[in-house]
Length: 188
Ligand code: GAR
Image (cartoon, rainbow, N blue to C red; front, top):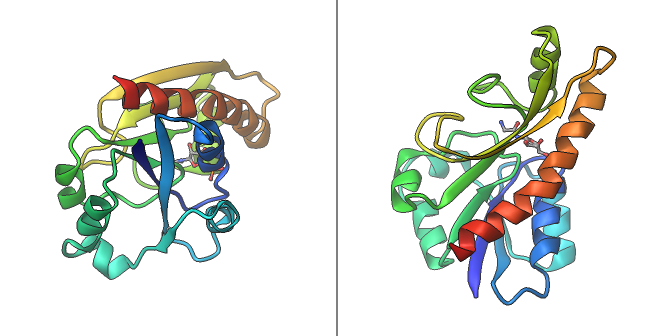
């Protein structure tokens, strides 16, 4: 059985989809959840699902090996960033080469980088007059949103879209594809 570790700081809807996808699977389980926000929805989900959860200490995250050790002890096979907004420190990236992935709510390399998350992304896509948006699932490297792309899926942007309606279209793609890609990476 493989171990999936999820980093999340938001509502946790993607994390929930991944947890549900692997319930009853003999391939993998979500065995640990980390969050940097004490009030993140994902922590409530973790409690309900009886999945161990850790609130990240910022000082320790960016200095030293605390979290590298924690993830090694957890025998993490795949580390999934699902709405986690901090840059992953180099020592963590290097300890898990090709085993950390992220989802971004736009078609990278456009609309990525620091500060580009959630509604800011959708507002920027609309302001730029884009005809399409979508999702990018990619490997994590030391730079924000720049690791090798694993999958992109697209949706149309219409003239009457708002950040909220676009967010919903993108979220449908995220919920459809993220669990599938996690499974694919664990089986290949
Ligand atoms: C998702 O839309 C994800 O793509 C985005 O945060 C949201 C988390 O939603 N991530 C980024 O913007 C990363 N730059 P969730 O907490 O409901 O899964």
